[in-house]
Length: 62
Image 1 (cartoon, helix red, strand yellow):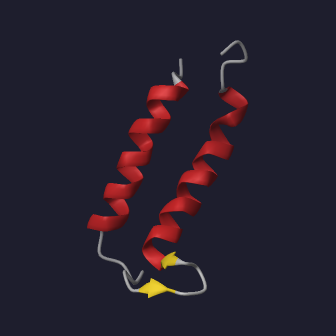
Image 2 (cartoon, one colour):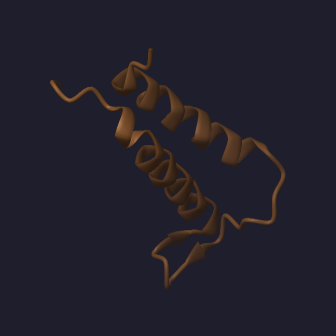
């Protein structure tokens, strides 16, 4: 059984940690077009994708 609220907040931290600790090609240099770093933008995309994937399993009465 999934408990989404605590799960999402824990996953947000896990995604952030994974993106900042795993060697990759994403830059931490500020990108004017994105108004953020490429690494941060990748984390936002990963988190949004995860939330969309879990949405069908969200409890309807909360």
